[in-house]
Image (tube, rainbow over all chains, first blue to last red; front, side, top):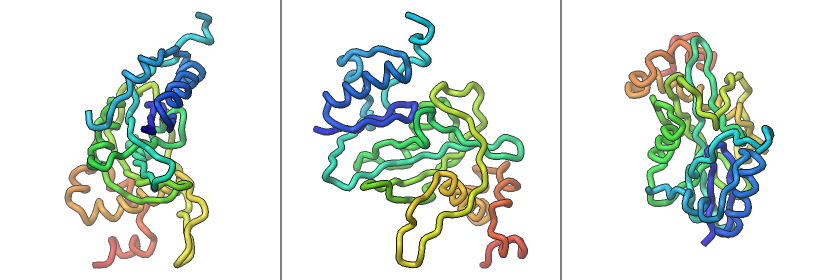
Length: 50
Length: 182
């Protein structure tokens, strides 16, 4: 399943879980100075109906 | 960790995470977070984008998504109103103006900027507008609210402090007569 993720800073990524993890890992480090694991990224994604 | 590598912010959970396909027409919500500061309006813009674009699941009310997003930033929504739509590439962007109370401590993911006047984006009678700037979307939203604050009791009650400011956005022919035609 393809997904779209929006960070609170406004950054948006679309793609598979793998693509989102890659993009968010890069974004988190380069734009926020934060390192995130794959598990943290996927666990931290909040479904809109939560 | 060197100073330049120190986290600017903790990366918060995503605002939305929704199914998406490049082969479908997709729709996004665009909350424009604005507040009144004295005699001027200010916009709260996400620091890494021109506007906030959030996914819209088909089984949710868009206004609820917008409200929830505003609250995630610690803001107090006063009014949410869908004000315009436009195409951005292959996606439909539904814009909500979200008037919020003046923020106390600003969320680190938001930039606080003045709202400046702009000419409206206009196309011809049958054609699309080639490009619409965010400033033009906000201009349209405030012109819309300037009418609603007089015509809609819910809007008037939600924005009692905004009437004077919004009167500047009334179309000039209406200004001369004190209000829109009935």
